[in-house]
Image (cartoon, rainbow, N blue to C red; front, side, top):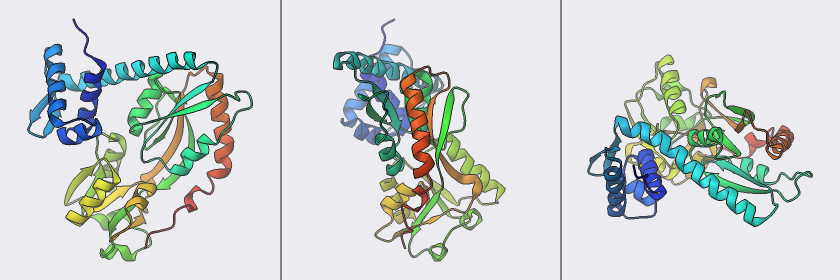
Length: 311
């Protein structure tokens, strides 16, 4: 059996996350035709279909779902192998590989980057970006030392240091009648168009929103999905819907006719944690987590007040 090339695995993983050829090609910085050729080459080499193809849309086959889970691990370990080798070539510097998502509050990242350890004066931090559920998987598998994750349920493989606890924010048109409220209840969103971060990005959070909504007798009239706040902004304008977003993401699009309000639902709060492997024996990782706990013991009390409401 000939093993597939890493670049083909990377393309398949991105397509599995987007399930749309043009969006996946854009993320990979290649043309759609190049992406299609890579997926065809991968599937031909494997001898089975990873995706069902229908014009722009892609859907994972049952075999494809199993394959992508393992492919992520392969790519993660390959990346870690390169990082480890480069660390040896770079000399005795201690390198921490920390993951974050594009939705991570900037102040949390800047706080982590400000940490200095007297025991490791040469420590350097490398940041890696991905969705929170994938970051948790990479920490569990050893591809990352630490990760800032949001909306991911506890896992026995991970040790979690909670560093922030914020409400979900609802982004909506300024002309919407709900914009008159200081905060919005979930039942007020019944029979509205809901715009949500795609399930592939955070299945736990996605399912929890619908579950709590059902308990509140709140159901959408229709729903749309996004992967970036800018996509959510376009969907709000096009469909006059309401988007469920982390605070910093809502703030990014709260302009040009769009405003934001916190969602008053205690079961739908976004808990952000610094995740490490529960069985980590790394002194560097353990010292860094302790220092982060001290830092966020002070900073964490003021994070909530950093962004005012966009009126």
